[in-house]
Length: 187
Image 1 (cartoon, rainbow, N blue to C red):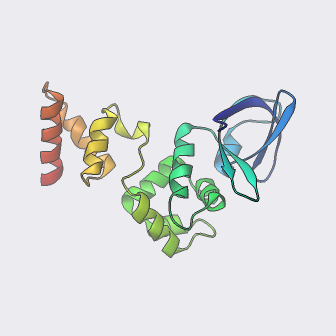
Image 2 (cartoon, rainbow, N blue to C red):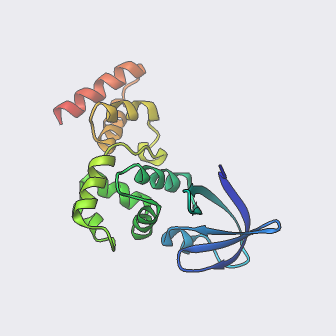
């Protein structure tokens, strides 16, 4: 697996980055948002990658952050969603916006992405809501506690907020977790 590539931007095209790394030039397919933010020709960059391999084709996909790649890989797990569709989704909205759309169960917001209908948007929301684990979402709350609450069926953002509120006291982690469950169950 190619985890990342570092090199010089040779050219940027329609969703494609050409990166010179040593004596090799890589063609890396990227979300439009990431491609626009990565920099201009001649700049040195590091791109997080995913190599998609099928019997008839190999394509290299690139991302600015680990979180972007994680969302891409989770989208691939949804039935009927391939790399092209996943890339289109991440080109239509950033990771934070996508996670917000999932949390709000906003089928209309997700289906605004060209080529993504309401049926597919609903399928994505059902498959991924509350399951994506992105580090920035927890606001300093230990990931394992948020993850445990999400596994119990609570919303990720509400779980992080409840843990933050419960942390106001100087209790043990176990007591904080118990208080968070009570806050989530009553609210």
